[in-house]
Length: 112
Length: 440
Image (cartoon, rainbow over the protein chains, first blue to last red):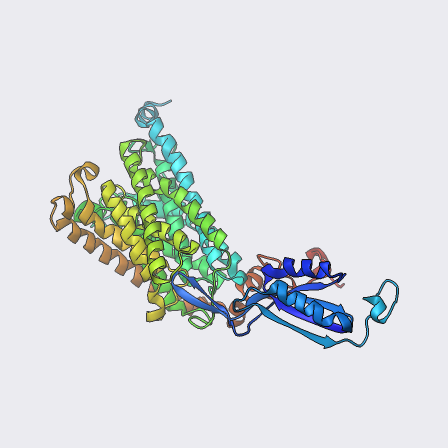
């Protein structure tokens, strides 16, 4: 199993959710995140005084999938989140040792 | 009814009185409006303290005004147009039958009181986020008596030297309110020194909708401030009302124009600040300039003040919410431009440079501006230093860093949860009665 983490622009969240639902992914976790990459931050101006805001708001989407689905899910997320502009985000995957469904106690891929 | 009372009642104009009652309430609303205007501009950790500095000014100034302030400002002159006497201390000798012009004296005194209140509250913007609250409670009444009251007498008091002897004009308070608060704010921010992190940390205004709401309330109240200063429900009040609207509008447009050209974006803070700058500048001039004059006064203030708010970064004084950049600079612009745009139809005689009056009036306006700014700066600096020596004027570094809301008032404005600015995370409520229960 793999844990896929995607950091994307907040306004692409709905597209990503829809894309994952369409390919039968039944659960995901979303949290608010902030950070920067090559985009760095942005500048705000208050009464002429410029403030450099380093951290930009993003959303973090986490989903655990079967090894076989991993590449397809990553592709779907990238396709849905992509705008082609700087600041689109990153997606990465890590191996997951075990998963337990709390309600039933099922373990492994059955718990997904 | 005694004969005297009957005569007094006959002199009171009910229309004038009704308008001034309403105008007084309008001006009083400006101080809570200012609290929101300022409160939105500070960071989340000290917004309540900012609101409190304005709110307590209402209470403190009212008490000293009734005790002695009104009499010293508007009592009969004791000599040279510098101060009134103490004949009406504690409002002695004034009752429902007392008449000032065509309105009850008690109403006139209350109307003037609301001006003193907001002027004190205005000063707080220069020292946001770092004042020891107890010191502010001492500063406000002392400052009101030693700075606001004398200047109000010079300008509006019977026999005051600026209006009655020098012949400078100030309709609604460019000198006693705007220039006095601005110069005092500059003095006080120099006494206290800059906020921790000034010029290093991003001190972003935490709630711009609140700033806009405050600016809206200020604008609304400003009609009472300026048009109420006609002290009657008449044509002059109407002309002043229109001038007030016009200057606020061109101030707003002027500031936004500069921002678009200079920074690339027109901002809400710029719109709110520009309107206020225009209103500040029209305050002294609303009763003497033509409508064209009002449009130019507002525009000049909007453009110049949008640059003036940047001076503090170059000259290194932390006038946190730009009392100098908006009120001092805007007040000076408006007071001086009377010398250019004063129109006979409004003043009843005096004419400015543009209408063939020559440079004479401009010279008088300049003398008044310099005298008031210098007096307010010097005396406020002195008061600030004495309070600083006696009890300390500045909050501790730890309080300032944590935020005055939590450390001074034991409150926080917003529930930010665990990621907030240090709001206590409590899972149970302990009523204070339980906490102090004796162990015996």
